[in-house]
Length: 403
Image: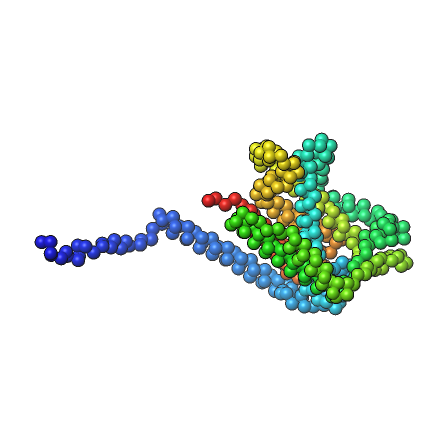
């Protein structure tokens, strides 16, 4: 029977029988889906109830709602703004934008300065120099125990106690320190500087791209092209050439005493200075402890192995220990950046007009309390989420990748 053909029904692959999908409450997947739907429905229903109830109560009391007030002319005097602002001409929406920019000016500069100062404090606590280590410890333990609001009031009172403009403290004929703030020379900006700044940004991007290409080439061939000559040309030489080709303008607007105050130059107000100093000094104490803990989390064997190779202490810290410590430092550092940004709302206590101060004045003038508070919440939520997204991205980039 070798020539007989086999029955195709016997040689065909058997398909498994179809199983009936039965919905059962004992299925954990089904239970999780049902509970999620119920919870989302309850949240939506609660939100709808609160909104409708609020609208009914406001309508019963004839209180206007909505954001139409943002397009009305604002009669809010703002003494410090990054963009031109004219009261009774610009709108409330524009005034709130000025407040947002003032908040960002404190938050961005504060984060940078607090990171630098906190890192120095954290490294100082681990210093082999007894005096430096003890001074850093006193700084951390002392400033963390004093409420931030008291520190802001202290710095503001200290700056307000400076002499009047006529008796101001001077550094040469360019810098003046008085109870009206710090007066500095201001560079007269022109088109040449704008194009030079554009060339600088392009040079930084191209230098970064070249450094990545050099790293890839090193990984492939073991030979790393030099990056610093390219950076020298793109970041320094090209912007200078662009600036020189457009006439090389260079002029300073120096402050001059006229009457009872100064005119010209750049003004750093006492309110901004006190707020920035308070936030930076206070937050740096916490960042210092985070940096110290991150460095101590690196195994001692890393120090010993690098020392056995003849590396100096500073090189070991900068090239070996800190890069490993960053994986421990970054997550709690994110919380400190968020705290600094949210603590800037205390500016209202010393008269700095940030988003909270401008929004409070707006809701007092327009009566739109709910909308004003909603704007404040939306601004801080947006800033905080932006910081969190950036820090989470950076943390994921430096995280160890398991192979």
